[in-house]
Image (cartoon, rainbow, N blue to C red):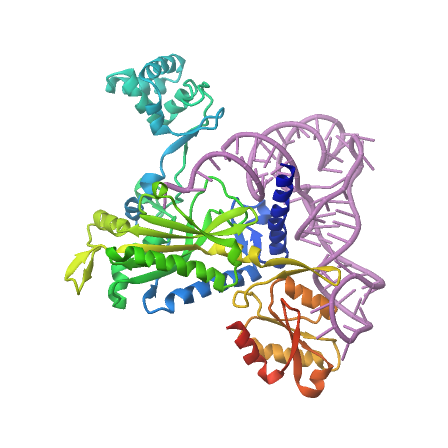
Length: 499
RNA sequence: GCGAGCGUAACUCAGUUGGUAGAGUGUCAGCUUCCCAAGCUGAAUGUCGCGGGUUCGAAUCCCGUCGCUCGCUCCA
C-alpha cells in the first residue's frame, strides 16, 4: 500500500514536472490565468504551438499524401438537425441526480421505474401536504387531474422542474433507501449551446460541434463528386471540438475544448473488416514512426457488448501516461449508421452509386479519430528525460526532429573575434527554411542545456577553427556528440536529418 | 457532481503563537568564458488565487468562491 502510494506520487511528479516545464518554457499556459484560470482550458505558448502544428502537419501529410484521401475543413457550427441525426441531442439531454448517501446516479426520467407504485402514491400525498406555493399546488392538481392514478402522475411530477425538486426531498433512494438526500437534477448534455443570430430564443439554438466527424459525413457526396473518388476513399479533417465535460482531468488529457484529427474512410460494406484491420495497424505505426515509445503504446479493443450505438467494432490506441493508460486515438467501424441517419433526417439521398455493380448503397465508414491535444501531451511526456551528466542533472526533451519546435540553435563559442557575426550570418541563411534560435548569453554549456530542455535537436557552434576553415560544430541533442560541417553544407546536412 | 488535499515571485518552496513577505533556481544588464548549466558584479519581478468576515492589525483564523491534483462518478 505504502509502495503503491509512493509509486503513484513518483509518477504524478513526472506530470507535475512536465507541466511546470511546459509553462516555464512556453509550451502550455493555463487559460485566463490572471483571472484565476478557466477550468479545463489551456493555451499553447510559442513552443507549444510549434509542437502542436508539427504533429498536425505530420498527420496531415500521412493522410493526404495518399491518392485515396481528401482533405476538408468544415464549419464548427452546423445545422441543429445534424446533432439529432447523429444521436447527440437524444443521448445527452437527460437530467441526472446523484444520491449523496450512496453516490448512485440516476436518470431522472427512469427514477420512476425504480420505485414501487405504493411508495409513489405515498410520496405524492406527502408532497401535496408539504406544498405552500399556490402555483406549485395548482401545477400538481393539474397533473393529478390528467392522470388516472397518483402512481402514474409520479412521472409527470418529475418532469416539472420545481415539483421534482420538492419530490426529491421526500422520496427514498432506490438503492440505499436514504430519504431525500439527492442532488438537484442536472442536465448532462455534453454539447455547448449557443444562439444563431441576435435573438436568444429556443428556435435559434445551435451547438458547438462535439466531434468533427459529422462535418465529414454530411459532405461525403460533395467531396466524392468534386474529387471524383471511388470507394474506398477517405476524408481527413483537423479541427476543434467541444464537450461540456462534467469534470476535466489530467492536464490536457480531458478538456472541454480540444482538437481532433479525424479521417473517415468510406468502404464497400463487405470490405469493412479488411479496412478496419488495415487502419488499426497503420495508425499505431504512425505514433511509433514519430518516436513514441513502442512499449508505451497498445490497443484496447472494446468488448462487443460495450460498443457505442453506431459501432460494430472499435479499438483505442492507448498511451501509457504517468497516470495510467489513456486513449489517444479511436478506430471504429461506424457501419452505415451516420450516412443512413443523415439520409433519414435530411430527406436527401446519401447513397453512393457504384458504377461497376450498377447499384446504390450506403458505404460503411471506418473512422480513425485522433486527439491532437492528447497526442501533444503524449509526445511531450514521452520525450521528457532526466539524465545525469558529469554529476549534474540534464533535462532533455527527446522529440523526433520533425516534431521539435526549434530545429537548430546557433552559438558563437565566445563573443569576440568575429564569431557573433559569422553566427548571425548562419542564422540568417537558415531562417527561411526552418525555425532556428540564436543565443550568445552565458557559457556555451548552459546554452546547450537550455536547448536540451526544449528539445532542439541540433546546436551549431562557431569556434576558432571556423575562422580558418569555414567549418562549424553540430552537436546532436541525444548523444551530445559533435561533428564538423562546412558552413555551405549546413543546410543540406540539417535537411537530411530533419527528413 | 461528491470526498480529500493544495493555491505565497516565471519555477520549486520557506514564512515560527495573527504584527504590512523571504530563499534557491530562472530572467535581464555587464564582466569572465575556446565546448556541455549553477564563476564574478549588479538589477527587475509578489492583487500572498479571488471576495467577504473576525481583529487595532490577516499570507496566517472563519465563511464563500475560483483554480489545480488525487479518489469515486462520468467519459453515448
